Length: 186
Image (cartoon, rainbow, N blue to C red; front, side):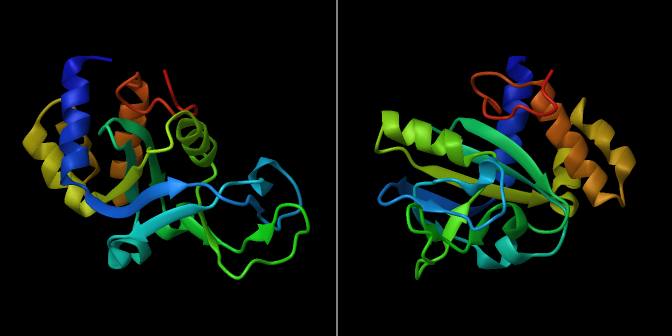
């Protein structure tokens, strides 16, 4: 990880649209009603705001970045379809009785355990999820110059652009960038 890579990643973060603000997590645990696997839970519910519903629901390949209250980018991911498919609002069930709860819950399979862990250590933790699609990302990459401007060769392939930049950020993973990412890290 170089300081130039960090600077470039934060330029992308600043250009991305704020979509979700997670204000806090806590309360009675809930579970997802899925057959098996680690995604079942139990999980803590979040108090959150959808800051830009149009971007959250937009059907296009996008890259999203999760930063804490301190501004550090903790996670970088992509969605091939829409952000709402990765940061979903899932039907929630009581963790003990499995009775369906009246309110669905925000969830992200890779980030939630980290959010819960950080919030347990610091209850004032909060997070912002930002999103940028390939069409908006391409001119920014060209403006930022090498090495990111090389992704301009993928012009017309929004999914390839966001996937390539996600991979580049993961390859530059460190304490100030993508520390929650485990797949595709160098």
